[in-house]
Image (cartoon, rainbow, N blue to C red):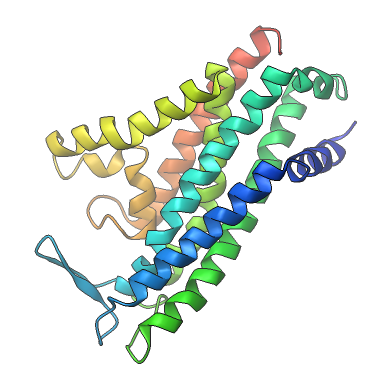
Length: 252
């Protein structure tokens, strides 16, 4: 079986699980709800109110970026569960028999997750935009001003990368709860502590912080494009490490 057929099989497999559809739909709806709320606090000039003594000048894009955090982590969790669920059920062993190379199966699974995540991100951004327009009213709200286009487009890459990161971590740890806990612990606890102690010129290079750099939420450190490249690099390393372990042990 070639890559295209494996990719198609993975897409169909994902769609047949109602929990996946509910999770994706729920993430989009919740993101829209957050955008509705954020739209109500947009200032007349299109910016967000001062936060922590700092004015958010790129407020337009950040109205949508706030809701996209839900989509990012929802797809990360789905990435974990899509792999660990198959490992637990033994279905990954069946998929393995369809192709002579483990790498082809692995790549197809990651590509299918990335495709679904990108589609989810696009849907969420569109729904968020409409929702924010409704509540922003007659303000100068414009999510595309002041670099907002790149900030928002970055989610079409970081959301799929989060799904890949989740899948790779799930494959590496082979335990859904453990992988999800490890990812959230690093993202919110470890990086939160490191951010408090590392110099301002260093902490923007932490893995999950680079997502904020790409989205314009973190304004120190590298430029947004470099932030996106850094997160892609971190994800590629995790995917490669998971694959090395994947080749050296039985699946299932």
